Length: 248
Ligand SMILES: Nc1ncnc2c1ncn2[C@@H]1O[C@H](COP(=O)(O)OP(=O)(O)OP(=O)(O)O)[C@@H](O)[C@H]1O
Ligand SMILES: [Mg+2]
Image 1 (spheres, rainbow, N blue to C red):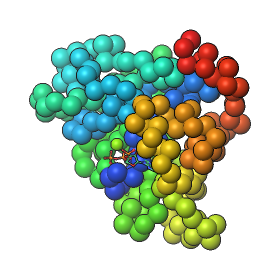
Image 2: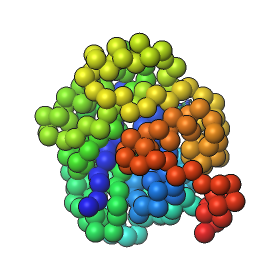
Image 3: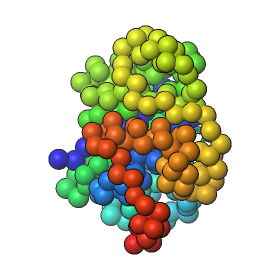
């Protein structure tokens, strides 16, 4: 059965798109799944850009406004991840509530569908939460970000969605601090990803850090997150196999 997972936060700029890219590419490349990642932020796009392109002839915006079919909006990343980007231009108001039917139409062909959701709990985000079954919430280790994350978790739970847990990003924390956050938000901490330049460098090169700098601290933290999501040990592949895999 397809798992439909939303990547959410509360506050903006905490690392949702970066997490979507790393989780999606890893589920596809390392774990061999058929994965589609959708940019559910139709007013401020970035997922496609993080994966190497900004000129998409058809995006989720055209699909949601009924101008194009979903098959025309799917683009392949070398990792095997399939991406449905959103538009960089303004071409009409989008009804995000339709995203749920887009998700449903993809289920037959996919193992995982990821939704990179917008920040805040506005209508776009609420439509994203409605469309998913499970959520991963990303926050930075400051109380403004954590309180917004808490609000998102509470809203999702009201809708009976399964909240897999919280990822603390750009975070270098002592175990006691992690425990304090866990207790305050009453949620599992899935992984603690450090603030690290390799994340930005890999993003500039349009390759997820989990693959480009696989031994770096953030990559190791992402691998731990992958094990929590899949319930399976991270399948580390040798360098030759890895290079061949990218060009397969
Ligand atoms: N662990 C990290 N270490 C260093 N920089 C990071 C880390 N994670 C993300 N970043 C950087 O932080 C910035 C914001 O990340 P990202 O775009 O993923 O956030 P977002 O939550 O998707 O933002 P928005 O709410 O605008 O959609 C990017 O420049 C990204 O490269
Ligand atoms: Mg984003």
